[in-house]
Amino acid sequence: MTQFAQHVVDALSIGSTYALLALGLSLLFSVMGLINFAYGDLIVWCGYFLSVAQAVGISFWWSIPLIVLFATLLSVAIWFLAFRPFDRAPPITLLLTSFGVALVLEAAAILIFGPNPRAYTIPDAIGRVWTVGGVRFPLIEVATIATGAAVVTLLSLLLRRTTLGLELLATAENRGVAQLMGVRANRVVMIAFAISGAIAGVVALLELPRLGAVTSQSGLSPTIEAFVAIILGGLGSISGAVFGGLALGALETAFAAWLPSAWLPYQQALVFVLVTALVSVRPGGLAGRVAEASA
Amino acid sequence: MLEVRDLGARYGRIRALENISLHVEKGEAIAVLGPNGAGKTTLMRALAGSLRVAEGRVLFEGADVTGQAAERRARAGVVLCPEGRGVFTTLSVERNLLLGAAPQRARLGRHAARAAVAAALERVYELFPILRERRHTSGGSLSGGQQQMLALGRALMAEPKVMLLDEPSLGLAPIVAEEVYRRLATLRDEGQTLVVVEESPSRALGLATRAYVLRHGRVLAEGTAETVRTSAELRTAYLGERRAAVL
Image (cartoon, rainbow over all chains, first blue to last red):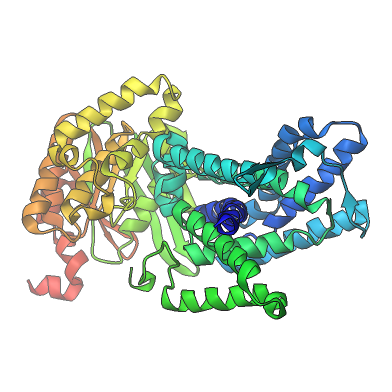
């Protein structure tokens, strides 16, 4: 029982990370049809930013707001330089552009920081673990679950209650008509990139302590995990991203816990097989409609 | 108030509009008629700014707005109810309407606009009581006629100086189309400037004081609603020269 409770805590923590990543990606997909393969590189660059900040003597605690700000600005800069010129281009053009952005970010990282992993130090306080009734609650996992819940709540309030949210939803559904009604669509898309960047910054804060160091390649794995989560949950909605992220977290934790050890190297492949099977039965994902094509 | 001079537009190599000149004055309702493919929707898009024109100029309140994007033109007071209504199906009726107030918020500032937006919402609900009744349901669950009312109401939320309507009776049952036109007549009587595009001329001519007839992207005839109604050009536009001569 204790063992199971431990798995639940772990699954919620991993799942929250995936859900946050999926939210950031899903937002951009909704607003401009962009599948952003450069998303994980934002997290990598947050790692480099942290190492540089520490080199110039900024403490980890002061780096927390700076990292979120950095990721937000980097995301907006990427929009301005790479995606704004391809405004209204077909999704395939945007997808290829995002690959280009990922390559540029990775090459720039190697040029500036070299090919070796770049380490940073994490304060001991972050590694703190509480034990309640035999179940371990690492601070970072608790923080991840709480942050995930907070971001999801804030984002849904923003979308449902505010004028900005209204303009985001309207632009996502029909950009042309939104513009006819006087909505500044470019500004809305820029804000979507800013929010998506801020979410990447938050994920970086939760992930970097676990990684301990970054390399130029570290961005690929979170991007792919986020895509699997989105596909699992259904594209283009908050609930889809959250369901998908949590389901993927549960699946991975279950595999890690109960697969025979000989199978463990194939854990990720098995996840993909299961997701592929699920999507062939429910093309819209867990939260999506079953017959998306008929709509 | 709103005017185009020698307007030309193309889709690739196909000419959609050629040498179009028309104008609408403050408080006036004009109709733009013509068969399918005459260039009516293209003209409306050029007026609203969602289509880049190849030749000619668009003037609004004396200023050249030819290169101005749709979102800026909407904030300046030219609002288009697009063909097919363009209702946001995932948003509630009320949020559809609130979105329409974007130009007001841009003009007055978010906080100062609050009272104006509330007043506009009340006015729209009085004009279309069905929208008040269904304000919490999604735009997608409305009937065609209700969606048209919502599109009109949403455009009114901007307090537009000129309202452009692209086929407001398209796909509606005659009795519903009549109702839509009764509301448009109310708006006209209140002094709202209107440009109405329709394929079927009778209702639009009943609403408008003046009319233009388009065919093959050119203005075939223009004049008061009465003269256009009885003109030979109107029949020619729809039937072609030979068959019109027979009639």
